[in-house]
Image (cartoon, rainbow, N blue to C red; front, side, top):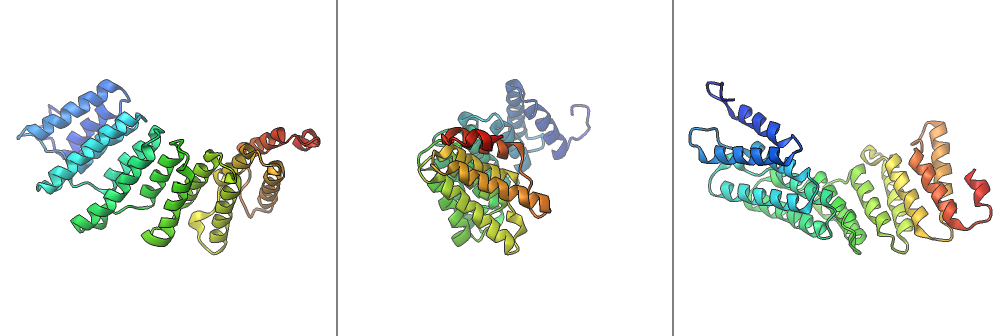
Length: 287
């Protein structure tokens, strides 16, 4: 970079990325130092939205609540500078999604609340700035749902389902297969009474939508293994029967070439359900 006659924005951002993506703390520190130099040096190329996104992404890849909070502070800085007239650092939908996903990765108990607050801020900023570029999309909602799923909070499953319903009824954003899988994961992890039935009902909703022509929500092996795991962990008296029925349905569809072939995790979940069932025929069924 120092040998270039006139480094442009792409060159500066490549150096930022080189530092930020080392995966080491000293690399991120160097990237932040370079970002500050770009901000303060009148002769240097000024940071852009891409510059900040690179740094925030590297921060959130640490997977801690502290790193997500630091990324959100940078996002606030972008908002402040943009509203002061610096259009080069206008936050994009990607900017917000990076931070929301950072909260999802953290697994912190309050990650869901922080992520949902950002989701709501995206909507308010889109209205305030008169731009749909920062409006929430399916990635935004899915990352918030993941934040709840990983939070361990008692109401995580309810709030994840509420967000899915909001997508259906209010936002006009179509949930993807990944969105549905994330909601089922939140429900399965909750371990609440009836969680396996709730997860299977969401799977049925996916199947119905797919049969109606929505190929974006076709259930995959993750969808089925999540529901099977929910049954295995449920402690319900008919858990093994329900899990086996789903597995047999998968096997038949896979043999006919009309569905998803069960993966190893699907079989492991059914074996787990049988092991917990206390059914005297469980050993034979497991074999």
